[in-house]
Length: 259
Ligand SMILES: Nc1ncnc2c1ncn2[C@@H]1O[C@H](COP(=O)(O)OP(=O)(O)OP(=O)(O)O)[C@@H](O)[C@H]1O
Image (tube, rainbow, N blue to C red; front, side):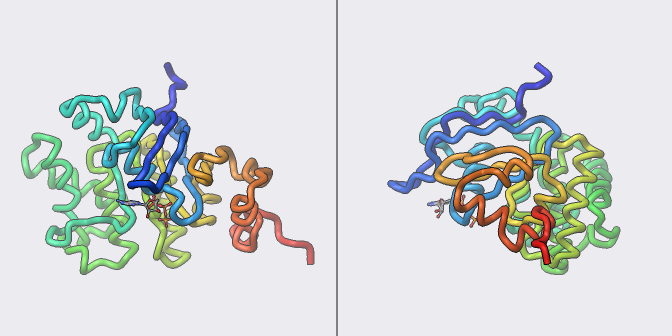
């Protein structure tokens, strides 16, 4: 079915002890879209990401990625399924004792049976695709700027030619120029590789620049999903404040106030 969502979440309940993070959350992510996931701090954006990729077991609900249930798939099939997505965690999560090239090779070593020189060549291609200079390949994460570390994290997320990329706050901590460059990179790679992108962000500029749709997490579920223009009509205190506030005006989501 051409239009089946690539990620389908139904009735998701996640909790830590008595703290309920999601309660009956539903979400569909369409193939090829960049979906921005926003919400106040602690509303469960990262927990949702971790549940979708199978790193966290929900209390209830169904999660299907690329037509397969993440929860009920046997280990071997889950390993194969896991190859079809890449994740860039909030801090880049690079191995500090490995060079950039070795970091990008790490998923290949784990998942593919390829000769070392082939992995080396493929890793070099990924490093170039994310716009890092040639000499970054041999550097350790501690020798890179924050923006370069994020690019290296992105290179590792696309190491296995995934269909879906999960990015957890990729522009957090970057200066506005670095953040805008990273936004362009997301779009370029989405267009070039046909990726579906699940983008957790607080960054209104990123939403405006790269997202096709936005999902707002509030009240333990997806409160609203649609275009940014759709969000302007949502009657909820957090959504109003976020999408109508001064930062939204600065990001040109809202027209400037008349002088
Ligand atoms: N491993 C864990 N054990 C206990 N509680 C957790 C765990 N992971 C997350 N939580 C709690 O779940 C809630 C949602 O966390 P999550 O990291 O998903 O929030 P978020 O929306 O991504 O927030 P932020 O925008 O601040 O990154 C928080 O209250 C957090 O403290």
